[in-house]
Image (cartoon, rainbow, N blue to C red; front, side):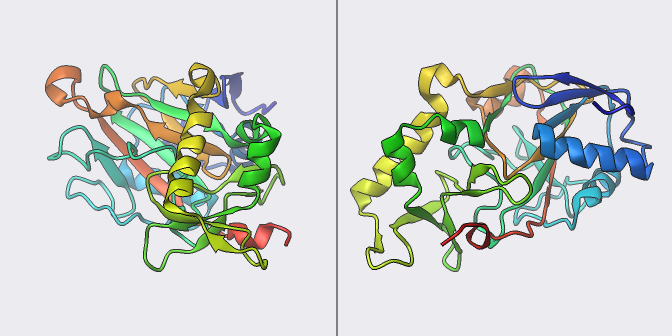
Length: 277
């Protein structure tokens, strides 16, 4: 366990206390944080107050090059900070509600890390996370064999093809590249003589199967994070799926203002390059 700060296990990941992200710049602490993100997949830094957009970007650069999303909002504190809200005048609305996903599946290499900071916490509006390795390990043998044959096509015209299941670039554990709301199709057995597009019926069933795995047994695999003031989350985007809960869309008049800042780090490992053929 790190000696620079205290880690307390959560259902997925750990709470972190004893470090001030607004000022921390010691190389040895930054190195430990990076190792702990890979090991625990989610770190929830407590009691951070409000972290500025510039500082959010500085922290993000510990993990690599930022890759801005295509969403921009005039209230964003920095061009590389994606600002999400339940009020259209304050941030982009309706975000994260199109299905379970990882961030950046439309890129040739999905985002490696996502960093979140809730600068205005509503009464309701949780983010649900789920560990992809455990989800894969919990599949029936038949479903796992099927998913191992599948490749996802992004809903972008020039989007890449990604294997649905592939090994994580740092841990080697099996993870998924997916977005059930931003996928235009699936391909069976890519690169073999059996390669073909999934039919519309197969496409709908596969998408539903993926959603069902996150929701089965009452969503037992999920960690639903109820945000508190001053929290900053760093997640291994390749190891953890997530979805905004329905309550994130409740109006400001009912739950108060919700404003979430997010940055994403450019991926460096196309999933296809990690999978043995």
